[in-house]
Image 1 (cartoon, rainbow, N blue to C red):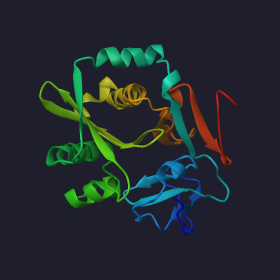
Image 2: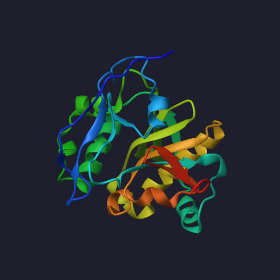
Image 3: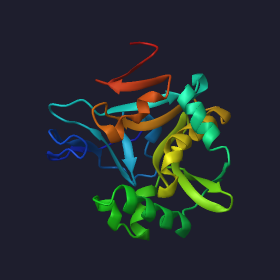
Image 4: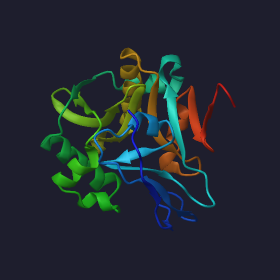
Length: 233
């Protein structure tokens, strides 16, 4: 089914990732349509936050590059194998609904790791609006240490792959590299469900908080309108 999409460009604003840059986004105004072809859009470098669908459209900078991991050909590095071994006492299950326990953990994570951002003021309704959309199946990879919820990966399930929307974890487990463990677990789950890709969002090489995605191989990046990577660079 074809659908007509209306798009627009935001005004320029300070870049949240690179202090010397100005940013703007290309946004999809019809993103509340229940038939939104999100799989096609994510293959064109778009991402979502709630019902908002966007991709960077900056005038002078092209550093934000969508990255997707080829899960069927993925091989963990030695460092990633150590992360898996370090966290082998963790268990997980997929949940279909958000919960107050998730939200409490989300707030603890933000207050410890991102206490200077707007998201620290989120209430439960803000959390729900940040996660849900009218047109996308979203599930929650809930991670437990014994019987305690210690990490969550919010994950969109798409036709061709899984998309990592947002992850958070108990701050006291930071030294375990739980964030990387969640990505490795999503890769495993995508592979077991016969998906080709794990979409990780935007890789920014010169931003320390946003350059970790490049360490999952093989991967491709969306650069100047096409996917480039190990296969076709």
